[in-house]
Length: 424
Image (tube, rainbow, N blue to C red; front, side, top):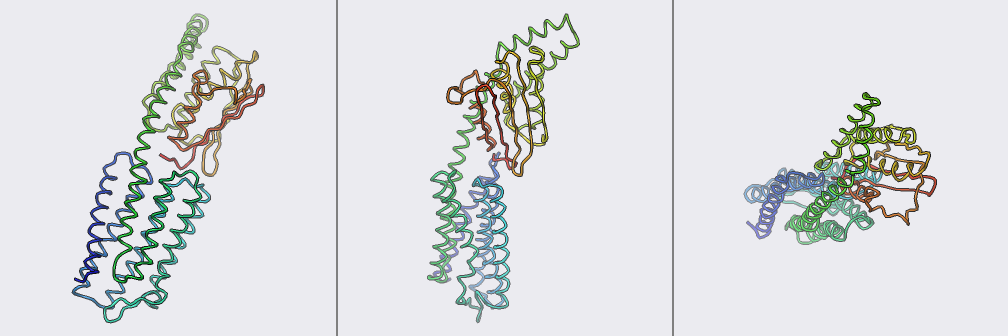
């Protein structure tokens, strides 16, 4: 074997071994993120890619023909484009991109990929990129254009990385290096012909992705899960308030002699309220909004038992087929009652509204209570049942948003946005 063949075979074997280790690590992980599934597919394809090139490296030593050269190099060109396609899919999944922009990028990517694959096939009959002569690979003057799709994808990803303010510095560096290293390698490979420099660059770029992105992100997620667990317990403890339990039981006790049927209904609602609160302590998964709504109605029923017509709640539910974090909406309703309408002698009205948007579901809880000035109120206090805790949980476990607008003596509106594409 020639020196370049030995180099190419070594690069492929090392690359396959490294990627096998990374793939097994992802496969053995119990709770894989969506971007990790795409990353795993990327690794598996790259293993196949390297194995194909390794096979060709050994075959061409003893047997070459024009047909074999054209078949193998056409396969390589298409596989190179597939490599870039899967990298783009991983980058798009990892980055937080608006739904409309994501669709536009997908259209550009799919059309570009299809176009260049078609050109690779056309090359078989025209030789616009390469031909074969006496079993030898012969590049045409326009060969560099065969990497056009890769240049387009790397440039697209690079631009979005630079302009994405949500990514950390280490994340930007990892993606930028993956865009730059293979491009430089492609140029070098056109200078040092016969050496699989581009394949070596893929290994280096992937290792940077692993070190800077996947390993670090897993550590960050583990830290966030622990923080979220502590936050959930804190929220839970703030929810089980002795005064509320005492007042509810006292009201039920009074009703037993006056209206036993109503007392039984109130006791059922109280039991359901406690059950939902207790289950939320250990609940790690998202729950259907209908379950959260049931919890809300149990709580509202108990408050209406105590305060009668002073508590008026309107349910404007236009969408309910989506998932939410446990105890993400009910505490908002509780705040609206306790710190909004019940501070008015005549009470007030609360509206719970849900509706669907193109890329999300929205829940709005509005009241016509006393309102407040955001600068003067500490939402971290237990008296407000940890709005900051709810905000943290919704944004970090769901990728959603919580917005609070309030005006003294006019009321408060809390808007919670739950994205359709859940970021886990």
